Image 1 (cartoon, one colour):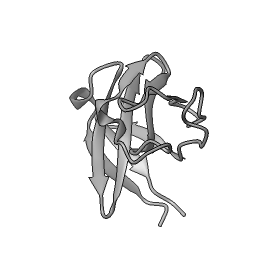
Image 2 (cartoon, one colour):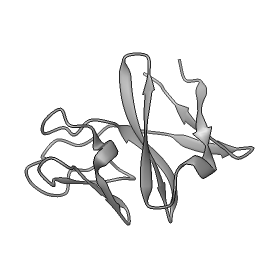
Image 3 (cartoon, rainbow, N blue to C red):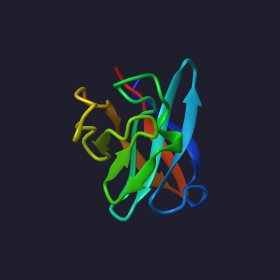
Image 4 (spheres, rainbow, N blue to C red):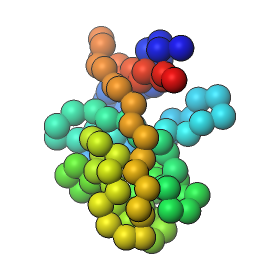
Length: 104
């Protein structure tokens, strides 16, 4: 199941912002940064708070609940209270649209 799935048009996500995208029974966060587009799991690993209301600062996202931060590109947990990394997913841009690869 390593198919590319269209998420949205690239211009639907403002720079230094993110979009919540739900697919099946899973939720994702799709980011537009100065370095490009990225995707992670949508929920903070500390408590089940979606990152959609979080703050994107450069290449980090801050959870709106307890202000834990993650590296957007790698999913690495950067500050307490988060200590578990986010899963990341490959993204490509094609014909003005954002595609995510959901794999095993």
